[in-house]
Length: 358
Image 1 (spheres, rainbow, N blue to C red):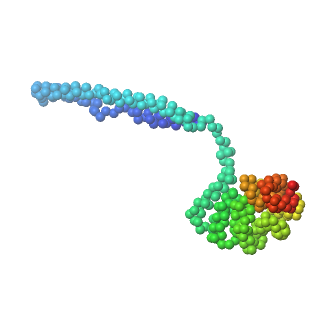
Image 2 (image 1 turned 30 degrees about the vertical axis):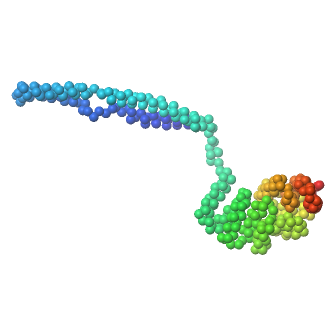
């Protein structure tokens, strides 16, 4: 079909070029001048026969008519420039007839894709990729916020999206704008704390903890604030407080839910039991946590001077139920802090607390 279409279009183009070239060369001269003057000579003879002209006048009129007849016959021949124009038209027609198809095929062969297979109809009508839809949605909201920077609802809408796709700094800004424009909210405040924590490679910083405390004060049932307050206590090494906070949260969660299983695993690990991977680490919130843990791991691998970072990384792998990585982290931490006796003692104590094999 494609070649038939190309041939048809090429034929139409060639026809459009040849049509004006095929028209005859028009001549502005009167092509019937010879017949006119011959008729005039015959009219002179009739006037003479009727006595309307005398002999001398008739001869003079015939002489003038004959002169004009000779001139008309000479002019009836096509001049050289007209002959040249006809020859040029023939050459142009030949070029259009042969050159246009050859040029079109050459350009298509060089720039086109004649060997590319056809895309099946099912693929053309298939639903677009979800990531592409998300990118389009984000772009539309960003465009609106550029024109309407005081749209608090827009900032509150895009902030958790930024958080889910790993744009943590943008999420911090968006949550902050939403709080400023919409007003204080436990969900927005805990979202801001989570964005700050994510930007800090999964560490609940003092600034992030302050946001979680504000969210909890506003809504004690806010699960995100409860969870990260417990995580902050665990990262600070305050195991008793962490257990109290985790258990309080567990009372409000369905045991079979992913958050419930996650909190159960943390309680088990802090209680000295072997934590088990009771949730899918590649789904939802767990995937984000794993991503942050991996970034912290990469940072410590390049710079192992942060003792608190090593302790938090060991605990984080236990949270994810990955005892082997927690043990590997402990081994790498001992190598990094080999010259620091106090650091080694803290690492050893943390390993025993978490049940990590030496």
